[in-house]
Image 1 (cartoon, one colour):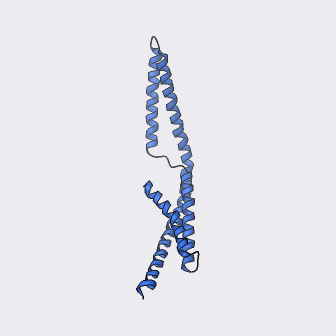
Image 2: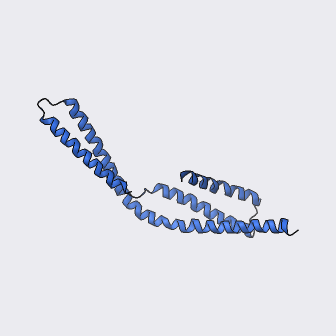
Image 3: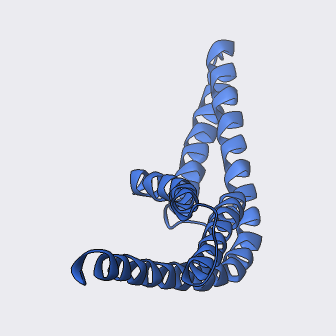
Length: 162
């Protein structure tokens, strides 16, 4: 999927350059309409890509499961730490290792919870930004139809009607 998006972006940036060169910088009639549609599609693609990339994604289904697993691992380490403290001769290296592992888990939990808080606002922004799709895709489809009409007309009048 990622390579398809890279191809889409590359074609979206290279295609307009080729269209402008093909037109010879003359934008009258159908060429002017196609050029305007092309500018709209490219601008909405660039803006949409930038905005969607800036807004964090929603909380996924795996995130609550990951948090539960972190909680269970933290509880296991707490039991291990309590058992080590009750030992007749506690090992400072083991206690330090367990404490370090607990701190790492607590940090990972906090990072996950912080990402959830950020994702809460992102859900609302993603709903607003989903309106971008209603500009980019229909104008792209219209651009394709007009381009096909251009190619058909060029073939008809330049080749087949002679």
